[in-house]
Image 1 (cartoon, rainbow, N blue to C red):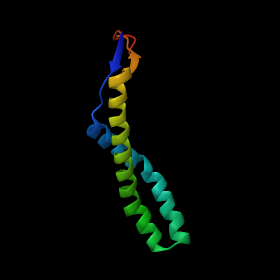
Image 2 (tube, helix red, strand yellow):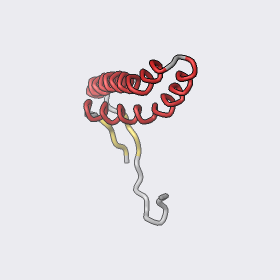
Image 3 (cartoon, rainbow, N blue to C red):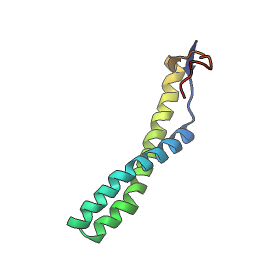
Image 4 (cartoon, rainbow, N blue to C red):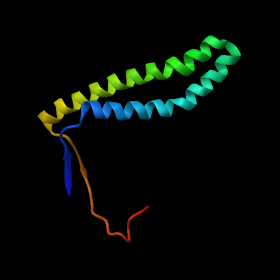
Length: 95
């Protein structure tokens, strides 16, 4: 069975991906804070741990919102992404 995605919610998509990107960035920000503590002092650590996730989140929200909006514009003109699905029996499902 083929299914086509013809519209995505701009705000919801941006919100979900923003939270995912913030969570995924935390280990890297922590590593950056450790290196900053050795080289740049307290100011670098505060910037890395507090301000960077906020900036990263805002930029991700705006960019994802733009991409979702553009997807909706393009999907109206040429159609959305297509994918195939297949119903599986309970004995073959992977959990």
